[in-house]
Length: 259
Ligand SMILES: Nc1ncnc2c1ncn2[C@@H]1O[C@H](COP(=O)(O)OP(=O)(O)OP(=O)(O)O)[C@@H](O)[C@H]1O
Image (tube, rainbow, N blue to C red; front, top):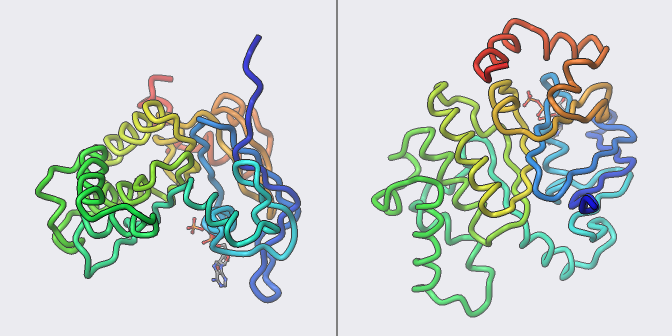
């Protein structure tokens, strides 16, 4: 018998708004353990806002956000912090602290763990840096000394600092050249498979969707309009969804993916 699907993220009836501007209304979403979920949608549909809402950086005006079985909006501070330690976030361009080296950046989340001494932190940081494919010399570099692709890898290393079960990635391949982007996709897929990571990935990159995403969630009309596999997306009869998945860029991505 197939194993039951475990939803590590369950969002129900979420409304987010800034002043009178409602970004999401009655939004539902499930993310399954171990999957790579690609979140797409037109500019301004609230992909980043949704990521920040689930990752606890924004409080929705209404609704329920459950992560790893915990109702995050009603949990007490200690419970919330314990769940938050089980995920990592990589923002666009890595969002590293510019005054810290790569090693120091990766060590930042570790500093919250009591009893983790400096030598252990250093060894763990070196491990995370190597896991994302950066050479050891990168550990002592400052973000400004790295290429955009290396900064993203360093940001990913920091997101992996506490051995998370879930990682949230905001447009990880934006700004990378096609080869760098494909390499980054391969890295994410490999980490997801090797570590059993669940990946919540906001992207505009059709190649990424084809190459590594198990399912796709489309944001439109203030909610998650549809979720499903790439094959299912190709059959959706909605103007934006159709234009996105059947446009010239989509065709090129499909050919690259060997479809
Ligand atoms: N802190 C904020 N204060 C006010 N409005 C905000 C704030 N953050 C986001 N918004 C608004 O919420 C809407 C959704 O923004 P968001 O960044 O999530 O879009 P997105 O789908 O990620 O867009 P893009 O693809 O262009 O990155 C936008 O209209 C944006 O202006």
